[in-house]
Length: 68
Image 1 (cartoon, rainbow, N blue to C red):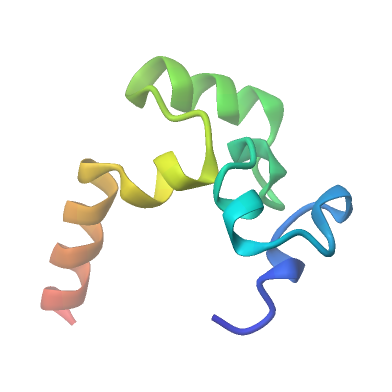
Image 2 (cartoon, rainbow, N blue to C red; image 1 turned 60 degrees about the vertical axis):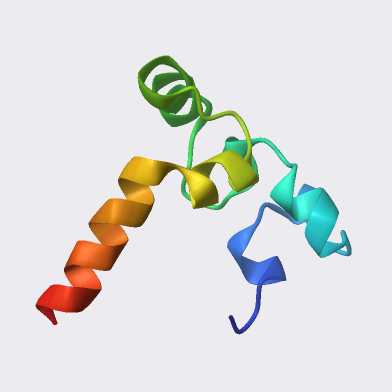
């Protein structure tokens, strides 16, 4: 995964993997509060864990890998 800490806002530096997984999705660099609101409305995603385990995102990732 490389530098996981570098994928999160500075407020999450030094946090463990469990804390990062349960962090709000807008803790990820590049995801705004507005983006997080839309993810919640569309897919009920509120945490990084929700995003990483969402069936639609997993299906899209699997299809993309198979296509490669």
